[in-house]
Amino acid sequence: MGNFKVHSISSNKIARKNPNEENAIPLKQVVAECERQWFDQTLKAAKAGETAMQTLVGQMLCSGYGASVNVKEGISWLQKAAEKDQEAQNLLASLSCTHPNLLCPAHIES
Image 1 (cartoon, helix red, strand yellow):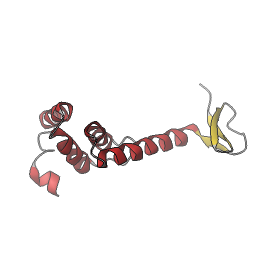
Image 2: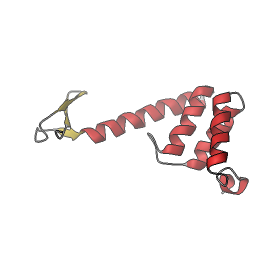
Image 3: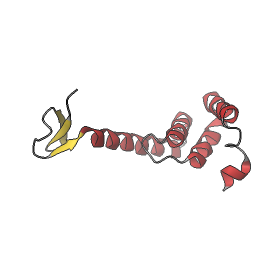
């Protein structure tokens, strides 16, 4: 596999095979920035009350996708979504089975 980097052309970014190209940005950085932007947009929708987005923010925070891992905050978003959403309830139930100490009040409040 080749070493791909991204070349900036005005505001657009295009992947290039040549890593020595001037103004090249490593593709890994571009992907990380896309993930961060996706998280930011999802968080905005979650704060506006969209239950599915609250569930997604919880998952993203628990896994560190698009944001730093923050299990405490992720669980908080999942709990908020679980008030209205079966998927969020299932995720919380799954977390309680695989990580029983994770959902104890002492861990969440600390």
